[in-house]
Image 1 (cartoon, one colour):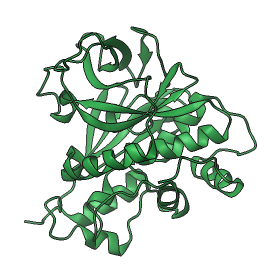
Image 2 (cartoon, helix red, strand yellow; image 1 turned 180 degrees about the horizontal axis):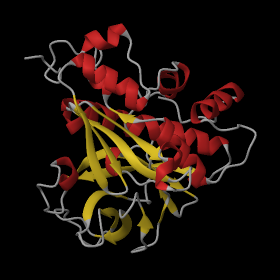
Image 3 (spheres, rainbow, N blue to C red; image 1 turned 90 degrees about the horizontal axis):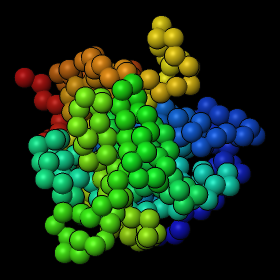
Image 4 (spheres, rainbow, N blue to C red; image 1 turned 45 degrees about the vertical axis):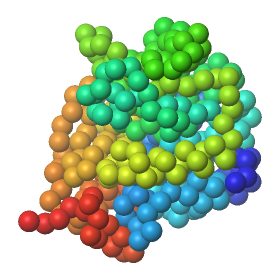
Length: 308
């Protein structure tokens, strides 16, 4: 697997077109991140809507699927973050890829609060050696760069907040080693939840991600869950009176249920009763279209919505 490249001129233009940005203009890291999470969803559809489920993470495969196919597709962490790293690199940012371990708390949807973490199963981006960026963590992913400063609070959507701590990891033999741990809380009244841990001491290679991808695509929660997430900007809900380019919420498909979470409040938009309804929901709320072949790929699988 080849290293993550600079974008070619035609790729640079196509990526910006997907984000709705002018390739000749200058943008801040925050502006690029916001456009990316609005335009490119986090999704696990390749593991379900396919005759041969799996995720290809070579850069040409990712670029073809998400940018060139022009059907609103996204991907999971190793796809979205690989793509975004290439964009940042091509725009002159000092970036490099790192690996992370997702917490059991996230993996069990809050049931396991032991403080333990899974094996290496997530990709993140380090920018300028002093910021964490992640456009591939789905519903609880940060919407802004996170400074690599212990305890500093970064705002999320509505009352949501993030912070980084540096501490030893429970269960590891060497408790002298400290790792960055990303934490999130829904409101100031609620406790902090652990998202994942990572180290800025090791750069991950494409070969590392190939091994991670094999595990994540077969053993993670996404292998058994059809999901899709995108950010919602203020321009979609002008009645809120927010900045049109501010992230005010997230649209989420979790299994058969479509939810909209705006400034900390969640509403159910649809509980899909059939595959036709879920495919329609993907197009209606995420702008994502599946081919007929992809639609047939879920037939007979455990994640197919079977009509009663």
